[in-house]
Image 1 (cartoon, rainbow, N blue to C red):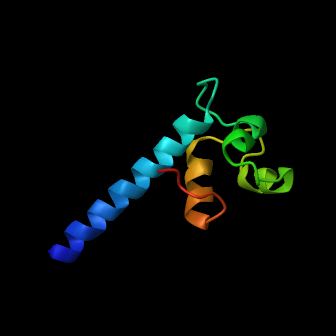
Image 2: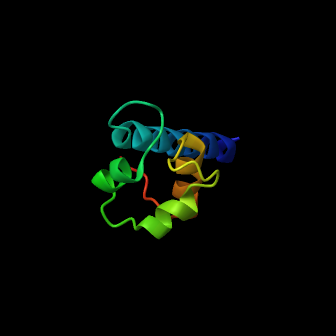
Image 3: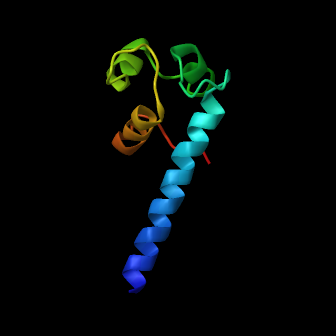
Length: 79
């Protein structure tokens, strides 16, 4: 039971970090992160990395794409 509780707590903290990342990145509050918005917070991200993160190729990152990039280690979760 203790392992379950620790796992659930770790998952909740990871999810809140990912959500915080989107709110920190999304300057115009449209629910999407443009390359310009992303590089304002993550200046080392290249256009090629951004394109790789943009799974649906719409030119911006949604929460799901940000979460996937964080889980893959492409983006560090913001505290």
